[in-house]
Length: 248
Image 1 (cartoon, rainbow, N blue to C red):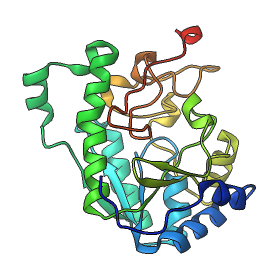
Image 2: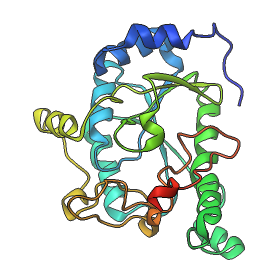
Image 3: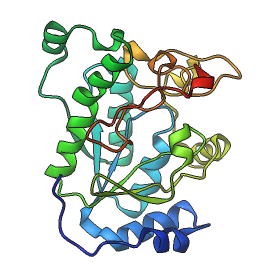
Image 4: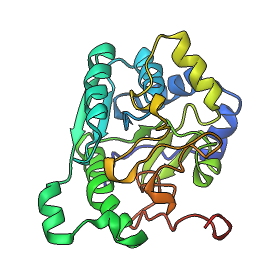
């Protein structure tokens, strides 16, 4: 992936500088550091209104990348339209060049072909379109709403990281589920419409199920085979190896 040439950041120094900074301060730092070369992504999942509102309060015209797999819930597509209108988003939609029907004809239902099939599906329908979006938009930095409590991988992250030559900025990394709920309530923002039906982490129709009280919020994704779809992992493989042995 080719990015614009610029001074390389000292990530240790940057993260020391941002230690204890709140989300708004991290977004302001990213705006100063990257200016028009900053983009953000959104899955328009359960809590996505938080990051969309936070970032667009500072950068109302920031490109918002949506990777549309072609398998999103009908409720998700309607939620995308609702938030795009409400927040006046500069939405950029990217998809695989392979339609869902053609992919299934050529490769079968990849999500039913074990962990290898799921990783291949994610590479085709999520990772490749995202990498193309970053190239097309000449991004140096990408803001994402990852939180440490969501997965083991995310628990290891710092506010600013480097992934495949792109700086990743995580303004709400330290937020808890309670913080998210309070922000949504304070600003009158909606959860995804499926949230109240037990869907706490929402992806594609065929790989997302509701969870019950006491379950990890991402237990309803990928049939429990893995925690990450690959967008937030280093590539070329970007493949989540699955849960730790003790969790299997």
